[in-house]
Amino acid sequence: MGIAFVTELMFEGKVPHNYNEMRTEFAWMIALEANHFNINNISKVHNYDHVFVIIPKGKLNLSAEGTKIRNNLNPTSPLLTSNIIGELKKTNIKVHYIQEGPNWWFNDYEIIDQFNFYNSLESCDSIFAHNEYDIKFYRGLFPSKKINIIPSLIIEDLVKDIIPKPEDKVIIGGNFARWYGGFQSYLVAGEFNVEKWTQDSHAKREHEDQIEDLNHLPRLTWIDWMKTLSTFKYAVHLMPTIAAGTFSLNCAYFGIPCIGNEKVDTQRICHPELSIDVGDVEKARALVKKLRRDNDFYKKCSKTSKENYHNYYDIEIWKNKINLK
Image 1 (cartoon, rainbow, N blue to C red):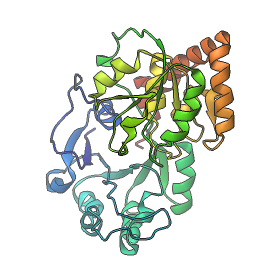
Image 2: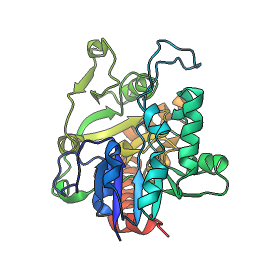
Image 3: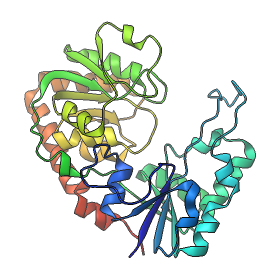
Image 4: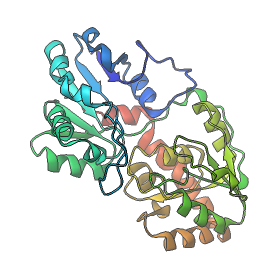
């Protein structure tokens, strides 16, 4: 069975198992033994049984209310008007859309692009979403279409020999932007009374380095990120954006208890007693205190996260969940 991925990434071919930047989309390609093509070169994609398309998010400068902050062209607009799904269906058997980012992202597009995005998904054979929460969204938009989940995934080749050595410190999942909810995570993490860390990302805010009691990791390759993460004892990730959930999954792999958004599958499944309504900052603080003071509770959460990672996210289990019929 031939499988291809089509994304904005600028390479062609297969992903090696020892690739240092093993984000979840690369893990998917390896698990499915797929070839990859850039989305602007779809003429090369033909005679595949299944083609998975990840349409780039495309960004516009809008306020949360939809007011334009600055006029700019949505870089995804040309792709949406070029009927890439229809072209791929001419030369391949089935074409599937994989969710990119939160399900509401396209609401920021211009009206014509919103309709073109909808029509692109409507023309796919099926849709693969991040979470159970997202399935409800897409089923509402496409009542007659097959909607599946494509869970986040870790390829363990490069990390299987890492021995976690947790130090008395906490990592928060993201920067001080609305996307990540870093401010809330920072305040809640303060209840641990240990060193607080976060990672630099595209969302890092100006002057964030001036927060005296928050340390920043530099931008790291995926493998260096995993090695560094294995040294943490606690994690807080009050990210309101419901997306792929790789942070919670990475924590679970090492048995790091993570407090986070219950609507994200990796969080809810791997960290059941630490999953909260993302707006319930009060409960998040209470859970921090319990993890810090109750060693039995900490050990239980750590053990559960590792067990549930292997029970639900092992690669063979992952493969069985991908329904391509």
